[in-house]
Image (cartoon, rainbow, N blue to C red; front, top):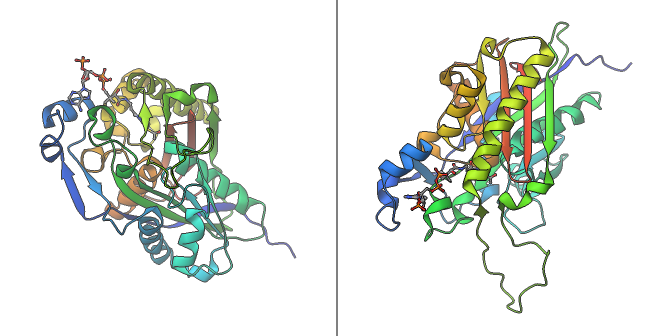
Length: 333
Ligand code: ACO
């Protein structure tokens, strides 16, 4: 007989930040910048740098192991490894998810990457939820993993100072609790804004004659991205709450992509909610793109601030342009 699945649930979380920390003061020794400028414009004081041996699959596997441990799930029980990343180990293939699957020994799992930049982890959660909902029972490892410090030009101050490395992961599974609440989600994209943030290295153009590709750096129109982010975060969170019939101020917490504290402050002002409703760790991590929401969720769990039944919103925005939001009662998706 087909088992009645009531809901999808977060079974465990994990995160990993590389050991090396680089402060704004250290950056200002080689860049024409200062701790004062960076902190006042972004809220960032330091970020983590991956060691030379740490790629996205390596930091992703470290976070994933901790998530499996906290979920009490064995690698062999995972049905899908889904990795959101903007900095894959290889240009296009194999996927970083396949490398993580091998590193962990998730023998029966399918694996693929999801590219939605800084919206990636929230996108991946919704894709994983849908995957599970179509099956009798399944367990999915969802990872956000980045080594963004390798994707920016460290001789240029406008973009580089924002980014850091790290990974976060969750294990999703099913539950049969009768009263498990359903989540709501919004996923969106506006490809007409693709030039606001991009990094070349694909095959849009004829390849250069050199056998080794130059490492292309991220390009960003900071002000345009800032304005888009403020408008979209407000839109996404407000719509999720309106559809649920609740006021945004009644949410327990908002776990939004950590791009810039000034973006979150502007959203709070626009939505007329206290800034403190946003969980932040930007000061010590910088922008870790598709890893950021996964990392802050794990931090919140480990601090004991996320309690069963808490109504929370997750939100991401980034290159594409893309955006994503989920309204959920922790830990039900
Ligand atoms: N140190 C000192 N001065 C600087 C620095 C720096 N690190 N960077 C820029 N400046 C200077 C500029 O040269 C400019 O000087 P000028 O007036 O003499 O020309 C001045 O500061 C102002 O520059 P702006 O670019 O207008 O600064 P702004 O206030 O917009 O802040 C920032 C720039 C922090 C990048 C901001 O626009 C921002 O955060 N944008 C959003 C970026 C983002 O969130 N991206 C996330 C998505 S990433 C993804 O999806 C992969």
